[in-house]
Amino acid sequence: MRERDGVWRTGVAYVVAGAGLVVAAALFAAGHGPGPAWVTASAGALFVALAVPGKRAIEAWGTRWAEPVEQMARRSTARSALLGRGQRVADSKQWMALSIHTAIPLPADADPDLSGSLPQYIPREADADIHAWLNSHTKTGGLIVLVGDAAAGKTRCLYEALIAEVADW
Image: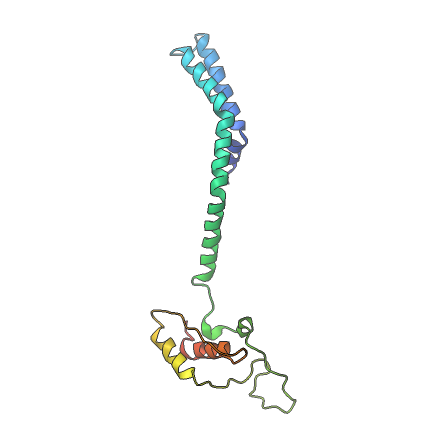
């Protein structure tokens, strides 16, 4: 909010403006201004009379629109954070965030090519279909849902398919 908006919201500016109109009316009434004095006096009185209800109306309007404006700002911030600033699939190391289970501790004499954190991937029967689906939907997008038993490797299957087929996303 700009500083001057805050002055209007507190009502100070209304009182000062109303007082200025009252002083102007007094000067006009004393014959120091053009036009009828009753016009300026009436305007000053009306302004002062409407200062408090006007302030309340402005506050109600501000309160009514504050939440939608804040929501739009949050959406805009989220959109900015997501669009164009995400990681490429190939660079993603967030498999743990997907709840892919970690590997069991390897013995000291284990094959050095094995990962100590991510278990070796066991190919599934559905792999070929998932890879084909990803290839056919790279331009149009879509939704794929895998159904299976708990800990059957559904998430890992999709993770590996994404790395293999759309790593440049």
